Length: 609
Image (cartoon, rainbow, N blue to C red; front, side, top):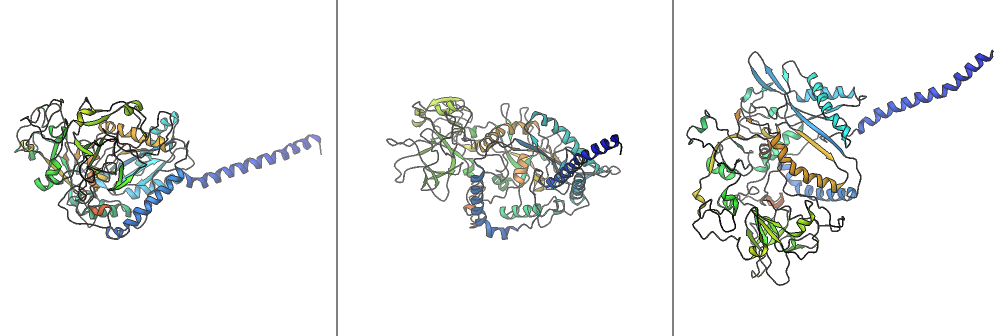
């Protein structure tokens, strides 16, 4: 064989191992892609199961509570020391599918969400080799679909460019699964939900049903996933009645409900310096008094709210109040928290003299306050001779040296300081001694001041006769089913922080930003075919899933006791299961930068009822 051919053959055989190795690597890569697709980080853990009806689940509530606490503590102990996790985050966009009949000029809900979702997820499986993708998951309504990016965003700035690109991708793919007469507009709610009777969906669904018992919508509009229907029924069963959503109706020139109302003032019902406020979740008293078609609204700056709000007590409601810690005995600096009346918690940070705490009196145990943070404090000593707490104005806030030295971070310990403590009242300051001299107590005003009179501290005081001011009653849009709240669409964001401390810090910061974002994105002016006098969906959602018993909502007329429930179904719960937060949770750091004490209570920054 010629030398040239021998060299060529030798080179060929030398390349064979290289080529075979490349093939092996490619095969391995393809195998890993297919195998690891099951480990893709995705948002949402909704599984299909068989949920228990309320009467069955009640039997297991005690076990669930105890096992849940043990499981949480166990899991927390496993992960509490983890540090340096990658910052990951993602968004969830919810879409509503509507069908348009152009010939009749009608629009209906299209109940094809599950069919559309299954179609889109099937297509995603065939496109997993693409870097960017989507995940489609069920939502409450049979017309709703939720979409998330297939892989989360990271903490790098370059990933910010992915957000809009992935949102556009999700919308393009959704449109490919819609029929010619279907649309998916970016709106928070279907304006005619509950206003079209049996003809509000495609296919038509009959109003009512055993799950919702609604007068406006039918069970058939709920997503067929077993979780959602059972959730609707169990919330109604636990509450003991249908949910009660009443939103103030917008007043226009031709709104028939306002025909007999006096002409509206130029400044509105609350004057020039305040805004009308819908206090959602607190309408039981007005419901009993005025019926379901009316609601009592308040004002953002009301003389009744300035000092001592006893309105709730008159109507049988229990309201949160502020109390000044003032233990008047030699050497006493404050009070230990109690996990239950009479059970001291020595390892929790405790309120000192001059601190302001938020809570309400315990109905079944006179002489005790249950605080907003879950702990208890006695009002007086056991013999009743030493007073520990006294009620103060709702505008009273602690303003002491440690709070100023730590800035905006929430303290987990109290640095040694001999500086005096001040109490901030309505924008002004006064020494602690002024409070201890009973210049702000429950004593009624001694003068014949009117509602807008000002006392020597510069504060408005409430009138001697609160009935001088009539309630501000307005026509309402009534809704009676969970679908009116959970049928709203939104955009949500979920974060994974590097550790527990950063998670708590982000939680507190987002709590401050959230109201601003809600105002900027308010887009829910239409409900049940009417124009509402509100713009955001938050209160509607809160009331749509409010499963509290009458006693838990503060109605003292409730006599029924349910032993299976926490607090026997009578302990006061101040908010719906879906509501704004009650407390900040970031424990902060001390002056030396170390978390040296395992305190759990952040009282000074959690002093707003």
